[in-house]
Length: 296
Image 1 (cartoon, rainbow, N blue to C red):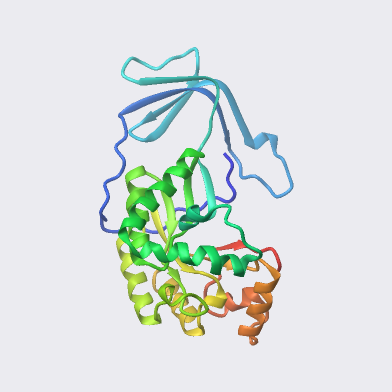
Image 2 (cartoon, helix red, strand yellow; image 1 turned 135 degrees about the vertical axis):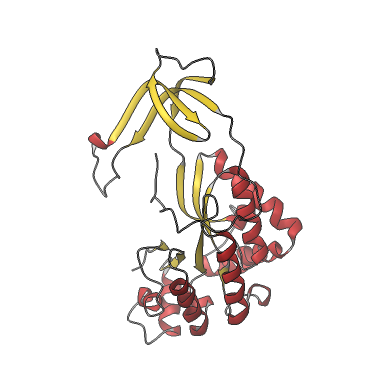
């Protein structure tokens, strides 16, 4: 299992939301070489005792849940649908802890540095997700690309549009995926089409949390783009959302490049550091996910 960092399951179950869970065949048996971990990988260490390697085994899945594993010479009964993959690895799904769904549309677009790349490619691509004709197929294409590469769980930045979050969660429910995501918060230093006011953003985030957090395999993340694109008022609002809805996640960016770090220093002179900007607004706890963190 290549887990960049395992996302925890969030919160209590919420009322059912649109999008029926994926239908699983009753009983499936997969034969191949099973590889998984029984202990979390440690920084800079290899723990052979935590690696579980079981060549030529059957993996038994009943109703969408793994119920057993047994040696290849002990096939399951005839009531199991059998699929054999000799010499192939059968792994737990990969987990991506930071990815942007609309950026699938601008992969390999040329840019000099981060801030220029956002203005030239990313923001125009995200603006198009206000249109359902873009948001619906975009969510499906993105999740199918994750699945094609073995990723079954992800922490995702959609766009500022409530529609983009709804479509992403609907598509994830239909595919049985574990997705943590939320409406991006921006109210300055971005194109007008991607900025909203604090009151509107708080209302829309609350509606999305109540609709999706804890539904099926989904969880909501209060999603601050990064400190420069939020006013102090919006950052305070994001902190209120986290306080009012215990169990939600928080995701943002942190110190991805030097120009960004210097920009934050000029915008928030009262803060001791880039991370302190988030801490002052109650956005730093065990459910916070900070992308990059290079120039700390």
